[in-house]
Image 1 (cartoon, rainbow, N blue to C red):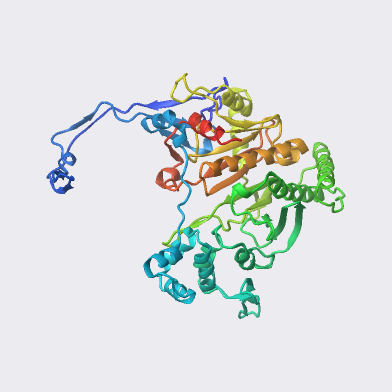
Image 2: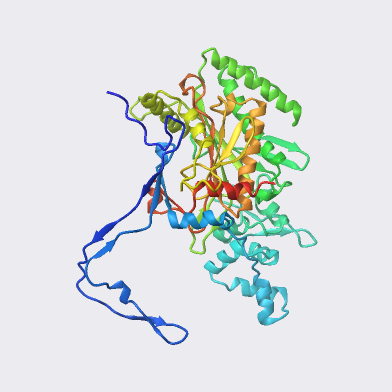
Length: 537
C-alpha cells in the first residue's frame, strides 16, 4: 500500500497549492418571534432599529465572502485562512500592515493639569490611592519616568545613596533563613520593571544586577565593546536537565530590539553555540579547549571544536543529548485584569538547552524524548515516502517560484525578505501568526553543529534582521523558536535548520480557532513580504 501523502501546501513539483472557498448556501429560518427594538438615533434624530436582524422567510447567500485555505507546509502546524476582501485591501496598500507606536502617557502631567504644582509627596499619595487595576495599567503603559519611579518605591523596599538614587533592594530573612527581597506588590513590581521607560538606575537595582533575581550561577560571558552578555544556568528548570539563558548584562541595558546591535546578537548567540558545543564535545570524549578571550580567538577556538565534533559524529559516535533547543521571548505585557500576556522579562535574553534522545518511562521502558524539530523530521520522511523527493528541496523551490495567492500578476509575488549565500528570511505561505517570518538554512545544515562559522554568522544576521523588521512594523511581543534536526544518524538527509518568528498582535492573541490550528489572516503573504522589505535599510 503506497504511503499517504502528508497534508501540506508544498507539491513535489516545487510549487504551493492554494484552495479557495466560494461559499454559497441556503439557511432555513426557524425563528418564532420578532424582537424589534430601537437601537439609537442619528445626528438628525432619525431612528436606527434592528429590523434587519429579523428577516422574514428563509435566507439565501449566493455570494458570501471568499476564503483562501492554505495547508501549512508542515502538517503539524494546521492551516491558514485568508479573507479575500480583507487581503485585497492590504494588497492595495501594504503600508497599512503596521502597528502604531504607543501613545505617551503621564499620570504626573495629568495631576498637574488637575491640581497645579503640588509637593511630590502629595502626588505620590494620590498615586497610592489608585486601585490595583489602575496601578497595573499605569505601570505597563506610562512613559513618564516620574510615574514609574514612584511606583517602584511603592512596589518594593529600596535603599538609596545620599543623593537619593536607588542602589539596591531591602532584604529580609525567610523561614529558612534565606535573604529575600522585600516585595510589597509582586504584580506591580513585575510590570513596572519591564517598562522601558523605568529609569535605568531602577532597572539595575531592582532586576538587572547579577544575583538580584536569585542564585542562578553565571557560567559564561561575552564582552565586545558596548556588548556585554551573561550566561546563567537554570539548573532547577521546567526544561528537563536544565537550561541556560544568555541575558544582556546590567551594564548593557536592552529593552527594545531597536536598541539591539548586530554585535549584541552575536554575543547572545555565541554563548548558545559555545555551550552546545562544549556539552556535546564532553559527551563524545573530546578534550575541551581552554577559555579564550572573546573576539576572533574565541570564534576560531569554537569552530575548531565544532569540526572535531562533526568528525566524531561521522565516525559513528552518538551523543545521549542529540537535539538542541533555543528560544526567545521578546517583549512583555501585563493586563490590568491580572493576566500576564507574554514572556518573563523584557531585558533581552535567549534560552537554550539540549534534549536527550530517549527518556525512561515510569514502567521502566524507553521512549523518544520530545523535541519540536522531530516533527519537521517526520514531515520530511512522510513527504519522501509519498513522493520520492526531498521535502526541503521542494519547499525552497516553491518559495523561489512562488505565485501570488490571489493570482494577480501586476503585484510582487516574492516571499523572500532577505537572504545571503547561507540563509533565507521569508514569509511562509501559510502564516501561523499574522506576521510570522521564518529563517531557513539553504544548504545542507540541520542544526547548529553542522553550521560552520560563516553559516552561524548568517544565522545571527538573519535573526537580527527578522526581529528588527518586525519591531519597525510595530511588533512589541515576539516568540522565536528553533526547529532543528537531531545530531548524527537520526536526521533525514534533507532536513534544514529552521527558525520561526511569531509576533503577538493586540487583537490576535489566539482563541478557539488557533487552538484547532486554524490561523486567520487579513493579508496575503506576498504583501506582508513587501511590507517587511520596505523596512530594510
